[in-house]
Image (cartoon, rainbow, N blue to C red):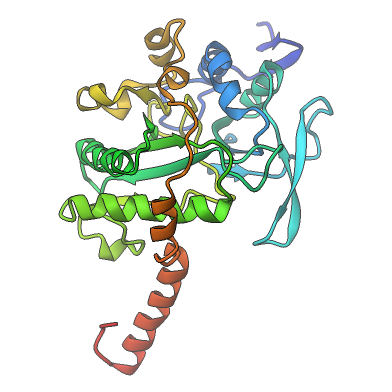
Length: 323
């Protein structure tokens, strides 16, 4: 029996017929074939952005890789980024071409999470992003309804965005920016968009960062800003069936589910189109009203940390659990 080894664009590909991960319903070959098929659409959304990937090695749990391993070929583009949280430099890959994408696929990199900034400008995000997660056991339709609240909040501020499935349970709304707004202001505006969407239908959506405070509502996650990364359009996900994050027209959201888009089905659905590029509005100036309102809203993670400490203190002392 011949050794199971191939090569594309000078990249050796190995163990292609192994299952990608338990329950995947797909092989490593399926991953390679899919990424190769969509390369002209996924590489543009990855290009020149520090990249984190989620890999699944045989017999191991999935893990997110930021630092490039020492065995990375010299031809893989890379960049160093200072990580304030860990006080160290991180050596990120830049997936700027087919060859690098194929190398990652052979490394069992299933998910692709680029940053919101490019290496040309670390201080001005290219997009404002809202991540909408339905409650545990909640239907995808709830996330769709919440996405429409976000769209309305944006429209009220004179802005517009494109929407895609997250490849998991929810949806992502991307608003392209003109590059004049600094990270701090984009983060503030994201909080304001979430707050305004919540006010439109507080029975459906919530900005509550602490899970137990969401009470079965869709979480409007406004924390995808600053140095954050978000799964790219067309990226596969480590989920049964290997779904992919897929662009959907606003008018079609009621007619789809995340499971409709997988490494097996997406290439045929795409054909020669690039619906993410086609749906993306022109870059926009960030609305000043959103920025101003957002700076009055506490940063969710910080507020949640203080609230967690307050609740723990209340439990220890037996005092009533109220602010």
